[in-house]
Amino acid sequence: MAAQAPPDDRAVARMERAMRAEIERTTAARSRFLASASHDLRQPFQAMRLFLDALCSQITDEKALSTAEMLGNAMTAGERLLNALLDISTLDAGTVTPDPQPVALDELLAQLVEEFRPQSEEKGLRLRARLCPGTVETDPVLFGRVMRNLLTNAIRYTRHGGLLLAMRRRGDRWRVDVWDTGFGIPEEQLTAIFDEFHQLQNPNRDPTRGLGLGLAIVRRLAELLGLQVEVRSRIGRGTVFSVSLEATAPPAEPAPGPAAALPAAAAPPLTGMTVLAVDDEAMVLTGLQMILESWGCTVAAAGDMREVFAVLDGLPDPPSVILTDLRLPGKVSGFDVIDRVRRLYNREIPAVVLSGETAQSALLEGQRRGCSFLHKPLHPGDLRQVLERLREGEENLPSPAPEEGAREAGG
Image (cartoon, rainbow, N blue to C red; front, side):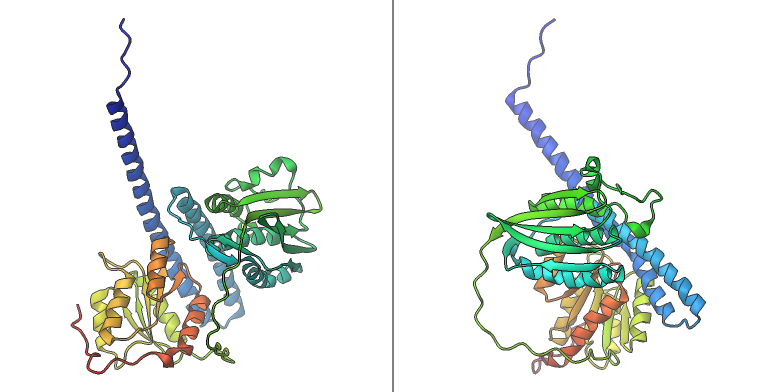
């Protein structure tokens, strides 16, 4: 029997091209699915959160308030699981691209200490920090997520004592340590703890004690950012997670500019603020309208571009702020709404984009337009803080140029 001839180079090249094309199609399809799932799955959670907050403001009975609080806790657990699963899927799909830049490591860590201090004090734990000036080049958002997951993990599994966040120089690298005085991790588990849904001392899968996904996300983010993550532990004494990243020279000092304005003594009320709210999901739009009106805002609600121009025709003045979902019917996006409304009034009206997606391209588009971003499912308190900051600068908005403020035809 004659031996089969090996494939020639051209056949091998065709096979390789076909395989690469198939991989690219699969990756693109997965990215589209994740973007759609991220948006569509977060929408009902967003509506429930808004309705619950509006309901709580109307309840006076203590027993009913207690029931509403338990409902809120259940929703929070579901939101955490959904966000963690989508984060892992997005990282596995390779759709997250780091944006490395010079970062003052000590300043970023100091902000995290203040962010987590209330949580640690609530458990009776002392959170300390040992920081010194140092600069690294990394993606501040993704690196911040790594450290937040480590701090959350440390607080969750520490019952007594405290935590320490420390940084120290080791040659050409900075090492950041998160120490706790928890129950410790057995040596044979030090690798498995980075697997999905792997938890210690939670056999009943109590969601209030974590989901077992935080360290899995840390591992993926560390690989993406080129970080070295180590863990050392002693049973009954505690654990330390160490993150190592390359040190860089600090950026040049910027030229001195005008003195920053002092913060206002108190946040201004939202009464009288006109908000153009745009979302194609009727439940979410109704929830937004209820919350905004309970804060004293005047709301112009629309589900698509045609309704945007219809509700604007009924306003005597331009809206104070544009609050829009990123994904709208057809090929229209929230950015299209922002651009059209700003052209309509010939002024840079502040805009807040609500999104269930985490694509870097969308964030960059929003930054280019000077938009604020809030990710779904958002908590009403976060939205109120953003609106209060925008209200503080409302009087500084530029007026329309003479003879250029006429409305364009709506569609």
